Length: 296
Image (cartoon, rainbow, N blue to C red; front, side, top):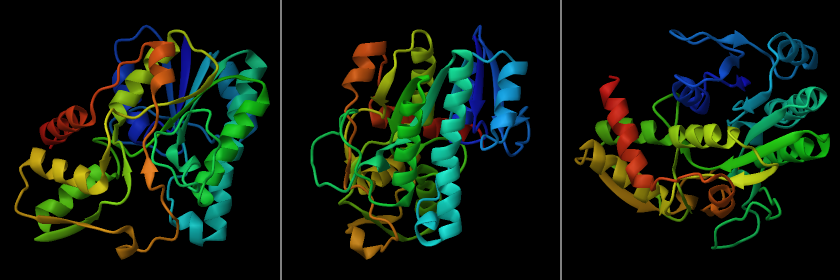
C-alpha cells in the first residue's frame, strides 16, 4: 500500500515514522513544516488541488490524518484562531475524505475526547455516543468527524485522549521539567481519563490498516487516573521525587474552556474488531520515559 501521513512532524506523526520502518508499505510523510533529521514532503491539507495532485502522483491508497489545530485555549479566546481551528480540524478532513472517495481509498482520521464533556457522566464514553463538546476545539473536531462521515468515503475515525510521547510539547514532558525544577507543584485531581502513549496509537493504526472496517473507534491506554495521579507516576518513574506534588481542584487553574471531567474511552470495539492489544497506561509511561532518557 501507498500511505500518506499528514502532520508527520507532530507527536503521533513522529511515532508513525518509527513504526513504519521495516514495513512493506510505502509511506509518504507530509507536513507544512520541516523537521531536522527526517524527510518531510510539504502538503497543505487546506488546499484541495494540492491534495489531489499528491494523491495522484503517488498513487495513494490510504491517508492517515495526524494533523490538527490543538491549541485548545487559544482558539477559545481568539476569533481568528477559532476560524483557523475550523479550517484545519473540520474543512481539511473534508478535503482528505473527498480525495480518498475520488480514488476509492481509505481515510484514517484521528479525533479527540474533547467531542464529549458537556453532559455529566462517570462511565466510559462509547464510540456511538452523541458528541457534546464544551468549546471551540471540540466543536471543530466534531465537525471534522461529521464531514468525513457525510463524504461517502471509506473511513476509520479513531478518538484518543491525553496523548503524550517523546516528541513535541505534551503533559508528560512538561511535568518532567516542572518536577525537576520546582520545589512544589499543584495538579488537578478532579479531571479523570487515561493517558495515551502515541507509539501505542501508531501501532494500533498499523494494525487497523491490515483490514480496515468503516466506523468510529476509541483508543487510549488501559486504566483510569487523574492528572494528579499521572504526574505522581511521572515523578516516581523518573526518580524526580524531591518536588512536593499536591492535588488541587480545576477551579484553582481557570481556563477559557471547560475540559471534560471524565475522559475515559471505551475501547471494546477497536479490540474486538481489529484484535488491537492495548497496554496498561503505567507500562507505556515507563517505556516512554526510558526512551526520553535514552535520547538525551
